Length: 345
Length: 279
Image (tube, rainbow over all chains, first blue to last red; front, side, top):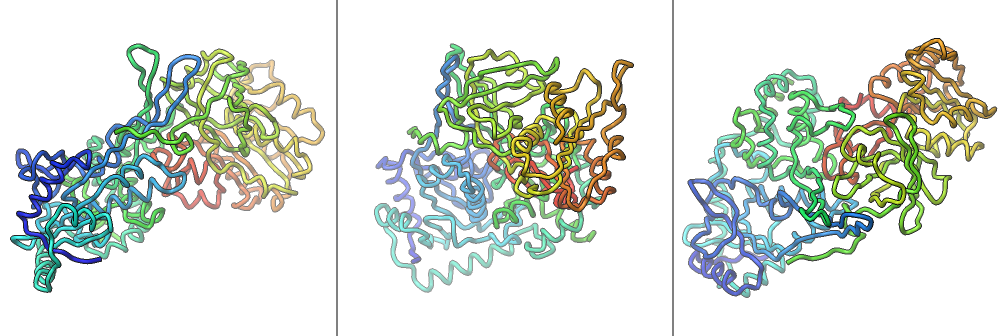
C-alpha cells in the first residue's frame, strides 16, 4: 500500500487527539520508567517513547493476558457455565517488527481449528501502529531471523527519519485512522531513500547473530538431539521460567478454577505457563515426562527453532533477545545455543 | 467492555452431564456413568478421551471406557490420584459435571477390519481398551480373531472382574491373564504380561496389536510383538500425557512436535520410534 510522511509534532498531535476523543477504549504505547521500557496506557503523547530498544514484556499481553477468565459458573446443582471474552478497542502504538511477527505466530496457533475466539476478537479490535527498531538491545538477533523489518502485521508502520516518520500503510483500517486523526502527506522519494538508509544503518547495530541462515535451524536441531550442548547449557538452569515469561512467541497456558468467597459462584481462568518449570509435563499419577533440566531446555530450543515452524509455518523465535536479557545465568538466548549446535554438528 | 460469545465458540466451555451411576471397581478405582444433559450421544471413537470438569475444582483428561455401541450414556473409569479425580470419587449420583470432547484420534478401528486383533492391557490401561474390546465384541464380524491379554500386579487389583469372566468364557474371544505376584489362592498365570507371549500363536502379518499400559510396559511388550513378526505399523499404542486443554493450544501434552491431545493419544510404533520423547 502507500507510504506517507508525518512530522513528529503532527504525530504527537495525532496521539493526543486519539486520547482525547475517546473513540477507542484505550490508547496504549511504549513508556519508560527507571531506564526500562514497557507497554502501558497513555494519558498524553509526551509519555510515548518510540526510540526504545525492547520492552520488558511483549505486547502479546494485549491479546493473551497473563490471566484471563474463560468461563464463569455457579456452584451447586446447576453450574450454568458461561463463556467469557473480555475485549476492548485499543490503538497500540510502537510495536517493533519482531513483536509483530511474533503476534502472527500467536494468531496462527490460536486460529488453528478449533479456534480460540478470545485472542481473535481482541486482535480484531486493536489497531496496531508499529515502529522500526533502529537501536536494538544487546541480546537481539532479530536481524538474523529476518525480522529487522516487516511487511506485514501492522495497520501503520513508522520509521524515524529525523524530524518526521515515514508511515507505511498496511491496511485500510490504518489508512482510515491516519486520514481521520493525522496530518500526513505523501512520502517523497527523498523520504523513502532516507527510510531505507536508516533501516540499513540499524542492521549494523545488532551485537548478536546466528552463524547460519535461520532456515537451517530445524536441520541442525534434527542432527543434534543427543548433543552435549543441551546438558552443558542447562546445567546451571534455575528452572525459573523467566525466559518464557518474557517471550513474545510463548503461548502455553495453565487452567485453574477459583471460587468466590460466598461459595455460590466461580470462574475458570487461564494463565501463562512455562515449559521450563519442573512440573509442566507432570501427570496426576506422578510421572513427569520432562523431569530433568536438560530435557526441558532441549524442548524449549526445539519448540522455538523447529516444532512451531513445522506446525504453523512461522518461526517460533523472532530473535527479540528478551530471554537473553531476563535469564539470570545467561543460557536462554536461542541464537547462542543454535550457534554452539552448529559448531558441534 | 465485556463481550459474551456464543457458547459454541469457546474452546473452554463444557457441556453438562449428569452422573447416573457410580460403582467401585477396586479401593481406589471407580466407574462413572454419565448422561449428557442435552440428551445427545457423546459420539466418540474407542481410544478417545474427554475433559471432565468439576466446577470449582478443575478439569482432568480421562479416557472413555465404554463402547460407542452403548447408547444414551457413556462411562469413564478412574483411579483417584489428583484433585479432580479425588473429588470425583465423592460425587453423588444425580450430580452435574462438565464434559469437553471427545478429543484425540482414537484407535484406527477401520484398519482392524478383517484382521486379527491382539489387545494387550496392563493395569488401568484396561480402561481405554475396554471401549475397543466391547466395541469389537458388539461388532464381532469386524475382526477375525480377538485375543485379549491382561496383566495386573495382584489379583485384588483385577479390574471389571465380571467382564473379564465373560471374555474368558466367550468362545469367540481368546483371553489370557496374569498377575505379577499372588498367594496360593490364585491358580492362574504368574509373571509380567510378556510371560504370556509364548502361549500366543498368531499370524503376525495379519495381526494388529493394541498395547495400553504403564510406560514401563511398552518397551517390553513392543519388543515381544516385534519378535513375533508383527509389522511396526500394526503395533498400536496409546500414550498418557498431561492433556490440559484438549485442543492443541496449552502445550502441556507436547511430545516432540506432536500434540498428544490432537495427533494422539494413539500412535503406531513406526511413528513413535522416530520420536525421541515417546517412550
